[in-house]
Image 1 (cartoon, rainbow, N blue to C red):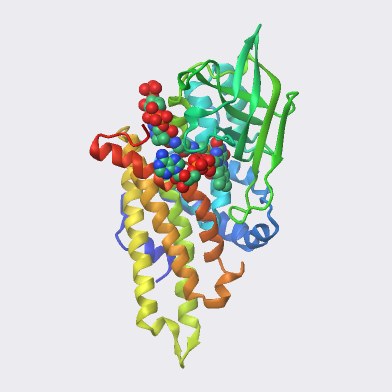
Image 2: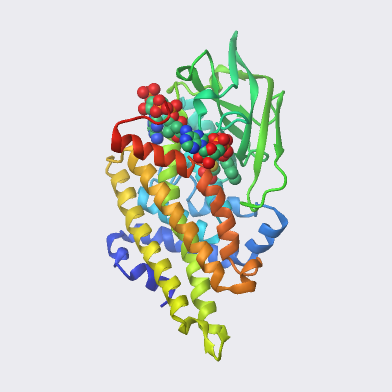
Length: 391
Ligand code: TGC
Ligand code: FAD
């Protein structure tokens, strides 16, 4: 069964438009030719394959589900398929695209001024301008309402003080969407477009990651950074700003993680067919076959869920609780597939020559970011019981 065979099982291709299939296939070709041969080395060396950024722009995957301003304007399903292919390469690559498109371009597109849209969106769609999203802080992770970064009005400017932690693309970003309080409570949160080189803005790479090694992850510090009014997002205030961006990004991630699971399944299946022990291919052992059957089952379930999720998004009928359900379910499934695939590879599975452990390590971050597994459990718990466990 070839990879296309996995996807053909439930005839999901029949549910895609020719344009959607074309997006997936175009990204898949680039991942096969330009990502898979080099990604193990980047992971080992802890570097992001920066040469791929303009390539992603050429492919049209950056902010692909947005319309106008140089964006491709494809369906959410097509966007998800592109992200899935990137994640088949590495979650770091998909993270780059999620942050750029769903967390930076999306808020500018949804709530930015015309001037902000013109200045940032076309360049970001081309990959000529890189963005990052600063919500998390050293003392505010799952509870962003407790963030401490402050913005105080001073004439025509705002003066920003505070810090952010774990910010994807932070060290290379030309523009950071920084969420800061302009008053006492979470209702006063606003989005500030902090540009590279603004005095008082420093980004530093976080060392020692064992996960998402092929990704930039930074802490950001703001010391009396003067941000002009023209760089404040005019159209949104309160936590619904950053949480709305997350809703958008989480939907893409819920769909995309299946790409990592497919890569792991394929590696395990092919290895099991070739590797011989006790004079037989290990694929002939029933325990191995059970693992492969469980993996395939999880992949198919995740694909069906992801597909329905993004179709509902295309129809404008997607409440956040369904995004939480899918992000929680599909990340957990992908992680289980990656861990199980790793066992089939035996000792060879602990190297970076084969992808499952790299994906499993990456997926530990995906389990935590964009709302931890536990946060999404409690979002669901609230919807089910009517009781808010966050207090
Ligand atoms: P709560 O009182 O429930 O809501 C405050 C306001 O926000 C609105 N809202 C949402 N809007 C859109 N989508 C959602 N999912 C939303 N959830 C809430 C809500 O309607 C309300 O609006 P309004 O206008 O009525 O005021 O907020 P809460 O403080 O009780 O928090 C709830 C909770 C815990 C679920 C939320 O804070 C949360 O999701 N926490 C997790 C934080 C998180 O996910 N951080 C991620 C940082 S970014 C990142 O990880 C990027 S990773 C890089 C990559 O993607 O590759
Ligand atoms: P905490 O919130 O301190 O949680 C620690 C543990 O406590 C978790 O298991 C959590 O589920 C649990 N917990 C917390 N509250 C509750 C509760 N009420 N009930 C039950 N359990 C609870 N953030 C950004 O803003 N921008 C980015 O670009 C970005 N990129 C990231 C990239 C990577 C590689 C990683 C690892 C993180 C990134 N993040 C980013 C941060 C990410 O969103 C946070 O790590 C995440 O929201 C969790 O916050 P925390 O790490 O502070 O954990």
